[in-house]
Image (cartoon, rainbow, N blue to C red):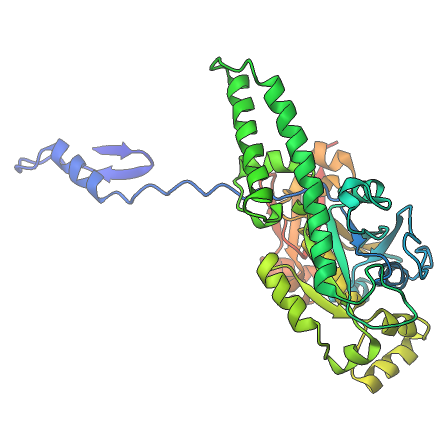
Length: 424
């Protein structure tokens, strides 16, 4: 006689022994492996749930923002000028993201068309002390910061009598403090207004309805957000939030919730010798106020000089001075700060990198190409870039059993190579 306990078979032999059937079952139950614990809830991401994310270049006037934007985008869209507010309307450019994997795929497939991943970058006018209350062109600038998803904060650490500093002298720590304060003050104003409106509409809350309960929970989260900004004196991205709270935070589009990459603009001389009196102090300030935020030293002066050269001349010059352009590193850091990854589609017609956010499932990743691929999704044939590089061809990957059919639950990994199947 065979008894089934859940999905584990338990064999019970009926004999005249003193062990009863129920005792045998009880013993078998005792030996059952423990139930697997439920998988932990997947951590939600701060920020807009979109693949089309933008990063803004922020800083005080005359720190090198527009000059940096120009060399990054290889254009002269940014109004580089030696006076505050030279940039008023933000300029936008799509910057190709350097990727050795993409280059290798192009060499392997030799496609007619090659489309890399891009980072959308926006040059925002200089912030000044008092911007949160509308000083200078404060309100317009802060609305431009609100419209981006991440921040490149350019910090000036070079002396140049020819380039005036809006605060009179060069002091990167004071400049970083000004920007953090202005962004935080604007967030406090925004959150206080939101809380006031929520409490007005929630005065009659008394019932135990789901809607009333949800409203009370939202008020509690907004009160916590305000406490983080005012009592804890922290940026929103540096506090711990659960997934329900992240939904509320994301709805507010707060300035201090956006990831920040600090770009320290050095003189060419300091950059080449990798020495500057301010760098250890800047690192200390970040560790104290925003631990974990990346810091990248670079030199706009050097980047401008290299930008004038042919690729061969540039390589020769970099070897000669013992330093190279920081732009590829900066672009990749910005892309990563937005929790962006990419997958590839490959063939003789085109090799293309598609940008998606970490945690994107296969149907939504396919939908980046065309909505029909998501709506009529059947499956994806997926191989990893590493497997293709190791085995050398798609046929060899398939023969090695590394080409996988993945369905709707599959979460895309950075560097996946995908072929989508969609229904008619």
